Image (spheres, rainbow, N blue to C red):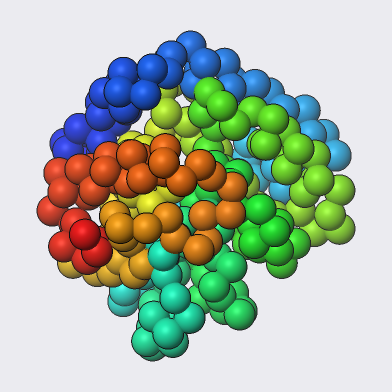
Length: 242
């Protein structure tokens, strides 16, 4: 987590809340509720226990550190761009619905999601992808519905829980950042992946990407400005289409 602390990737969340008029209490309530919900469902879904989630995180960290390259997919990614990703030694992190661009999940390390990915996210969950699931103030209905559905799968997806508050919450992590895209970058950095081994594909300020399944266009474009600011703060906005 040192990268997030060093670059102010957690502190910027207070600025974002102020800019959009959101309250930290709403973020905190949602996060705590999600932690409690997962703990409750872990009585039936053994893979969601605190111990198994910790092992999932450790395994994911090892996979990402050993990868020659970590490719992070943004919402504007195209099939052609995915075709250009070559090499079995690379690992892919998909930002929420962008996972829908993948025909198979052979090189998919995880999906970083705040539950906006719709059918694309559910497909990943059904196929056993590791999901870095994020709670914030206005997505409680979505995460509650998704967790309820996923818990009934014959093989529920592995979960890692994240939040965006300055508080410590047992079993959850604040990796820094704001949107799924820049949070995916923050996550990779928190796992110990060097910036030079991270490649961004499908990040744009011009349009709301085709894989932003559930969103409000005008607000999304405002969010992308913050995404770019966060990436710029760590010197990684060079691949963002402006």
